[in-house]
Length: 80
Image (cartoon, rainbow, N blue to C red; front, side, top):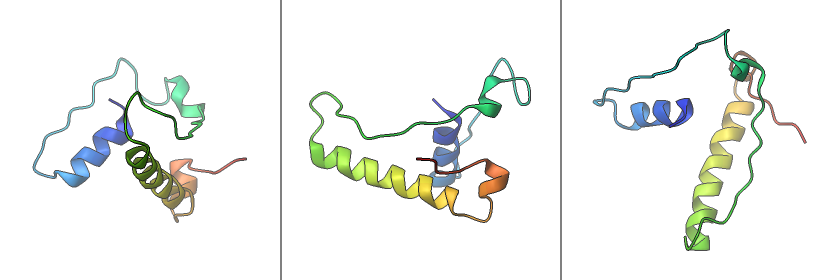
């Protein structure tokens, strides 16, 4: 599970306990300078309407971060 997923779970289930396990943390990772490339993709026999819904929610979250006041601090930018 990725860090974003763990954070989201913590936000929607505040009573839960989330533990992050990693062999290295910032600044000793390549992730500090990595880029994320995202696009919707078919997932087996998953109905297209579910994929569209999930994709829209993901896109809304990504763009909200990129246009937020914290974008620079988060390193969240849209590049085309």
